[in-house]
Amino acid sequence: MSKIEYKALSDQVYDKIRRMIDDGLLVPGGKINKLALSETLGVSQTPINDALSRLTGERLVEQRSRHGYFVHAYSWEELMPIFELRAGLEGMAIRLCVENKQPSQMRRLTHAFDGFEAQVPESRYDDYLRADKLFHESIIEYSGNPFLLELMRSSGYLLKSNRRGLVRPPGETLPEHRAIIDAVLRRDAREAQEQAILHLLRSRDFMRTLKS
Image (cartoon, rainbow, N blue to C red; front, side, top):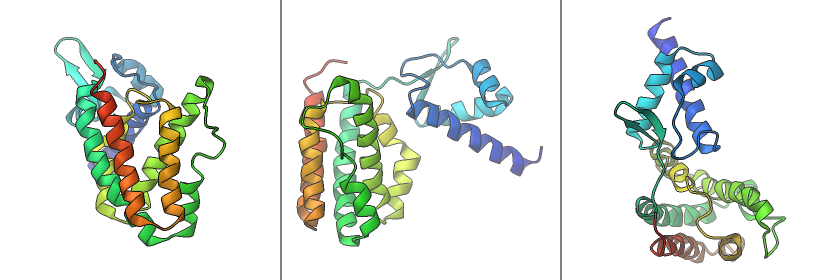
């Protein structure tokens, strides 16, 4: 296999393992079975090792001496500065979304939580988490700023944020999401930015009350 072909394979394996972490197929704190991954993805362990090394550098995976690789389980203390980062980035991103005024994109943002009532039953928490992830990813994607998008992809800060599931229940966060959406619909860029920042910092503040 040529170097170019190998690089393409290595990147594909990395992307697939990263997606498995994001989708919860590889659970936080769980040991990664390299042989099983090799069989599942139909590749040798060499690109598996390369991918795990990259993911270790991104702190999505950790290597424990003589024990192998594990999916990094983020503590609340570790997540707090990530949410502070998100507050700044997503606040600016939602402001740019409003300023860019792309109707098709606005529809995806403003309808992200359609179908959820004020009281979301626990049976729909997974659905709500998926909607939450899509909403926040879309904010960055539709900002129109390629550096924000690259930062989200390269740092994996959204993926890391979701490692412990919902930080607060939908009963608290759904009104906050809708306040952001309301500001977007009114084309109030400043209010959308402020609401996004408040939303994420409230989650940061809630983490302060928790123990890892």
